[in-house]
Length: 198
Image (tube, rainbow, N blue to C red):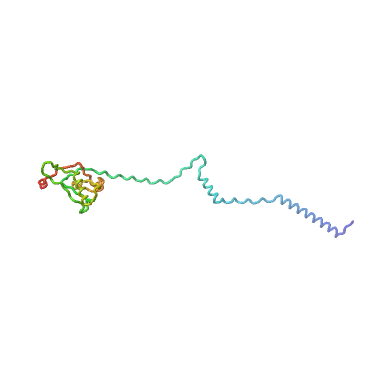
């Protein structure tokens, strides 16, 4: 059977369409086999909890190893305070009279009263006066004047004029005023009235 020109063109056109379809299919399959690799995404930033965990792990020492010593600022070393100077004890140079002070301050006016022992004639009298004698006499005088109570202690110091000064307090009271403690066993004979005037 013979085909006219119009039929031959339709046959060629049909075969061309088939070939084009086959080529498209081959290109599609080939492209699918060689697909471009997917882009690698950047690593995500660690979360706050992960960062804290890493910090904690970095701060702890591995098992079996001691942690490195941490340097700290040196604490100031306190300067030791020198103990107070011990009170010196001396014998008074004047025992014919003494001062009984109301408070531990020999510089205050009207802060004391004087006391003295008189010479007694006759046998049986020990006309000797001592630091202890003035301690007892001043203690009684201060109690009577309501300056101290019976339970309050008194102490005897040596004043700048060499006499005995009795103050409320203990021996450290003398050192606090810059005065030496009077030697309690120091004593002297009581002078007679004639001896006082000569």
